Length: 195
Ligand code: AMP
Image (tube, rainbow, N blue to C red; front, side, top):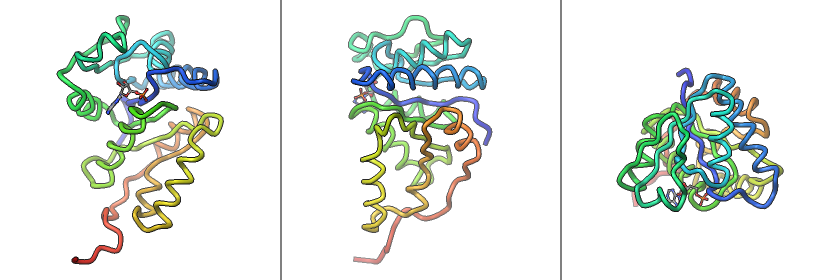
């Protein structure tokens, strides 16, 4: 499947290290440079605002999807190609997943992790066959990578499902890896036996 739209999950805060902001800016620019439409949560705050602004400045198309309840808190971005206001969080995530051909997580907090893991579990169950990527910035995700290896070692996650997540430290490498990725057909269950 050729990639046309990429959904980015990232912090509604900028984080402590300026490198996170720099990475969000670089990713936004690279998406626009490749003609990839950015789909994201629609906020103007934190890394969300930075990735959107960078893509727009570089001439890219940006679609934001924001729940009514969050529009004020995350300050719905007014300069987007399109800002869709939806009923709630479930509608937001479903709409972002529908519009995107692939998903990238940047540094972020609980919302970012929840969004990444949800879309990953959907891929694991075969609900979609879209690539997933993690932009590793200054080792931000290293402990998570270690824990993912632990899940595989403890036989709760298949290596093929762990490997659905492409990890790279530059937007260029990450987008290249995602473009080359092919879905696995492995079933979700490990050591499945009737109880
Ligand atoms: P965070 O990574 O916590 O800064 O949040 C990043 C984005 O995830 C923001 O747009 C939040 O509104 C959103 N978010 C926060 N909590 C959740 C949740 N439970 N499910 C999905 N998205 C969330």
